Structures are given as C-alpha cells and as structure tokens.
View 1 (cartoon, protein in one colour):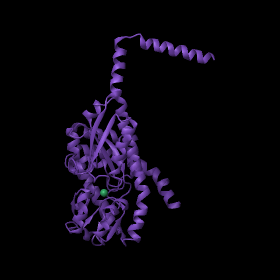
View 2: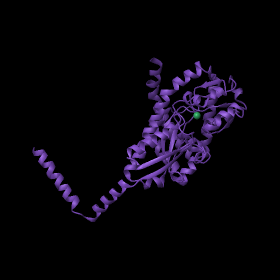
View 3: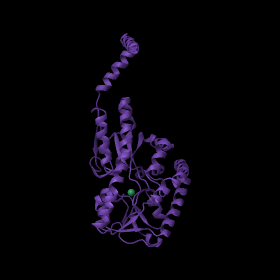
View 4: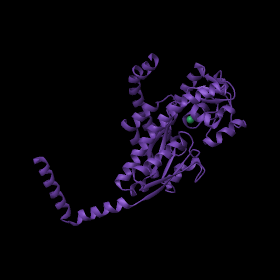
Length: 365
Ligand code: CA
C-alpha cells in the first residue's frame, strides 16, 4: 500500500513538472506529437526479379515488417530489377536519392569500390555465421560504413545464402586446362580468380543468365544454390552441377539506405529500419537452409542433374590464384588492404574455434 501511494505521488509530481510549461519541453512534446503523425513513403529498388525466392522475398518481408512495426508511418514500396531501374543501377539510384533504399550485393560495385567485394563474399573466406560475426561484432560493419559514406549511403547486411554451389557447366571440368577460355558468369573476386586460370568471367544479372547459358553465349554459370537455381531452371541449360561454392562460401547481401532520407526519419523509425534489416538478414539464411535440400533432391531425382566436385588439383589452383588476386588487389588499393586485414584477422581467429566446434561436430553427428 505504501509503495503504491509513493508511486502515485511520484507520478503526480512528474505530471506537474511536465505540465509546468517551460518552452523547451512544450516544444519537444509538440515535435514528438508531430513526428508521431508524420508518414513517409520510400522506394526500395533491387537487383532481383520481383519476389524472386530468397533474394527477392527478403526486401518484401523487410517492407512488410517496417510497415507493421511503424503502424503504417513508414511505407516501403519494393521494385524488382528493371521495374524502376536496371539491377546494376541500384547503388547509384540510392546514392542519388531517386530511391531511398536498395537491396543488392556489394560485389556488383567493384568497379567503383574494389573493397566492396569483401562485403559479399571472398573465395575460400568466411561462411554466413562467420561473416555475420565479423560484421556485427568484429568491426566489419564500421569498415563497410566508411566505404559507403562518400556516396551518402548507409549499408546494412541484407541476408545470406549460405555456402553456394560452384555452378552449372555444359562440359565436365577434369583439369585446370578445362578452365582455359571457359566463358562463365561469375561476378566479384571469383571471376578474377577464374580469369587468372585462363577463364573469361562475365557479370550478368539473374534475369539474363538462363538465356545466355541456353544459347551458348556462356559455357557455365554460377548463381546461388539448389533453391534459386531450380527456380531459374538452370538444369535445362546445362547438365553438370558442381559443388561446393569455393567462390561464395557465404554470400552476404546488402541493404543500401540513402543517408539523407534516413536522417529525416524520427529516431524510432530509424531504429525500426535498422532492426528490420537485421530480421531480414537472419530470415534469408533461414529460408535457404529450409529450402535448399528439397530443391537439390528434386534436381537429382526429377531432373537427373549430374552432381560433380572439382578435382583436388583444380581446387588447389583456384585457392592459389585467389591468394594472388587478393595480394595484387591489396597492393593497388589501400581500402582493400585495410578491409582484407580486418577480414583475415577475424577469419584466422574464428576458424581456430570452428575447427573444434562446427567442423568436428559435422564430422561426428
Ligand atoms: Ca553467386
């Protein structure tokens, strides 16, 4: 009873204070009330076909969550690749503020920012779990923010596919020599590694891949993994499906946020945007984890896809070429050197524990 009385007295005192009307608190209250009424409509452009499994459903769920969490105060309209702008123009579109947000993959911008590639995937690098650790608790995000700041952009992790497949090949790869002249859709550093071994890498958006492979414009392609590759019907364009995705061991997607637009939001909506990106980030990995296995089963049993692993000598050559590519990049670009150092230091320490935890566990269960 005594406690209750004290609480009431406290509340009355607080109300009296709030009501005693100094100008500043009145202004703050008025501003708060105004902001609570204010609504925002944002555009979000993506590099994926509208509602494409995983990659395209993540920004849709993000938009839905933001609208629900903000009680309709922030509405985000999602555009598939080509609806508002082509898939490869997402970065510039959000940077200029034509759209407030984007969903894409940082390695598409390697021509502008070579170090951006570290924020999608590094061949033979970290997996999804490790990348998320580095980004959110290991200093990675701060480096990413620093890279995008000159473009008036705030980055956020936008989902992860998990370990990808090495891709679809029209012919078997039995030796390093078979990579000579191989025209393959493979963006980012993976493409540069292939190029070192005599291959010809190309960067095509998802929607362009099937036709290019079917018509023979390319001899091979990587895309994502069984869930996404089955959705594109890549099995109808090439016979051999190689594992594992040495080039993208945990492809991290990205949300791009126009900084000016973000700063115009009241603090609570800013927090909602940030929290909703984290939800979408985890949710995408969950979706791939749940769907890849059944898609692989269908590819094997229904579509008679021939699964193959690269011979060890090919994998070794790729690993070695990757070291050369990264070393050259770091020598020529200070940002790459800085990000690589942070990435490599995190990988070296995380893999010591993962060798006796994750790896041992997989072997033993
Ligand atoms: Ca890929």
